[in-house]
Amino acid sequence: MPAMTALPPTPLQQSPEFLAALRAYGAFVASDAPVVLKRYLGRAHVTFASRVRADQLGSRPRIVNAETDTPRAYRRLGYRQILTPAHVAEWDLTQPDLRRAMSGKWRNRLVKGEAAGLRIRHHIWDGRPHWVLTQGAAQARARKYRTYPSALLSRYAALSPGAAHLFEAYAKGHPVAGCLILTHGITATYQIAVSTPLGHHLQAPRVLLTHAAETLARSGITRLDLGLVDTDTDSGRGLARFKLGTGAQARPLGGTWLRLS
Image 1 (cartoon, rainbow, N blue to C red):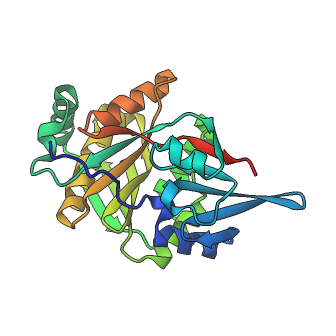
Image 2: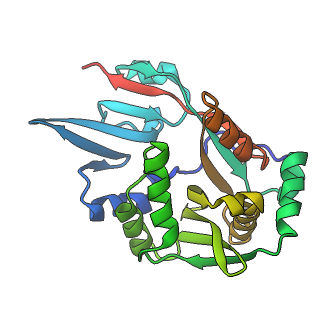
């Protein structure tokens, strides 16, 4: 597998596309280099930034979710670590054959799914209501995890034409799985993924993700961020196996830091 670069491409949270969507959504943006937000707590406010490096912190937000693990640099800037690093799964799309790096079990299930007669549809999302967004929001509520509001994602799609990709899988004319992937520069982020029980049985999520990765690679995208890898729960471990089974690599982020003064 080709070696990964020392510093990853710009993450979604620090991209100009995301900044434009935040402003249109009405978020309180304190600065745009890096993207720093502020939330009001009564009359006070707290500034924070996600997925930033220490060398980007000219504005010194109060709370930082660090992109890379450089503790000494954050301590020099007056920060104290309050949460240990999480990990993200990053899929290198520059490989000549993405399927070769997949785990054997993952690839075998993919082959089974590709033989199931699914119809795959890919189109650019323009921000209008769509069932993948509706089902994604319902799934987040049911499983009690947080995700970006559909209205924010809609603004992302509307303000950055061509940057929001919807992939759908159909069986006998009925949708059984879908995913939303956002591109920013030469990087993409796996944002929403939903599937029906039939879709899981037919391995539709694997077929969709592989089709998406190969499509994005042909368009010049070099890396697909599959999101956090969580192995603390049974459901988290299953999702981690799904993400890493593609051949994606788990990379530690830099933890969460609080500026003391």
